[in-house]
Image (cartoon, rainbow, N blue to C red; front, top):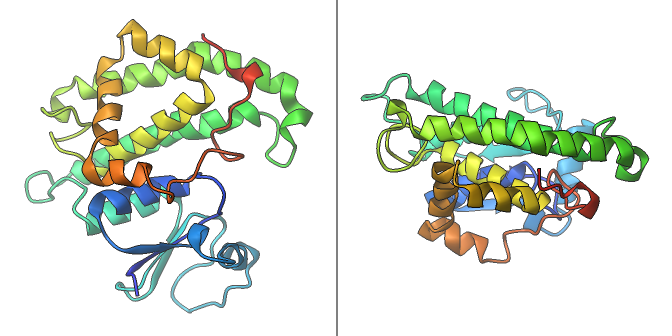
Length: 254
C-alpha cells in the first residue's frame, strides 16, 4: 500500500495539484482518488460527515485531504498545511540545522502565492458567490478580471521577482535558500494556472522582461525530470471547471 493517499475531486487539477506536484517531485508512491474508480465517494464521505470519527483526526471541511498511513494514520486538510507537512517529510524544506526558521519563511511564500495567484484568480470568475453559476455573475466577472489583470497580477509577479532577487533567495533561481522547496512548486502551479486563464496578459508580461526571474523559475520547475515526466503523463489532468478557467471575454491583455 502506498504511504500517501490524496483525497480530491476528479476531473480538474484544482488545489490538489499542489499536493501532487510535491509528491511527484519527491518520487514517492501515492494513491489519488481522482484516478480511482468511484474515488469521488471518498471525497463526499469526508465533506458530508459520513466518514467515521477515528478518535484522533478532526472532521474534514473540504478537500484536498491527505492520509499518511505511516504516521499513525494521520489525516489532514488545507492545501498549505498538507504541502508544508509533505515538505518536511520529503526533504523539500530548508534544513532546520542550517536554517532553523526557513520553514516559516517558505510557508509565508506559499501562503502569498495561494492568496494572490489562486484564491484571487478564482474570484475573477466567481466574484459574487461560489454557489452561483459563472453566467449569473458574468458582468461582475468581466469587471473583476480586467482590474485584476491590470493591477493585482503585476503586483504579485513583482513581489516574487523581488523575492528571487533578494539575499534570502540565495543563488540558483529558487525562492529561498538557494535550493528548490515546496514554495517553488506551489508558485509554478499558480503561474501555470494563470497562464491558462489569462494567456494574453501572461504572454505580454513575459515578453516585457520585467519578471524574468519569475518566468525562469517556472521554466526550471517544468523541466525537472520528475515534474516533466508527470506533466506529460495522463495523470496530469486538464484544466476545466476548477480554479483556473478560460473564458474568452475575461482574457484581457492588461
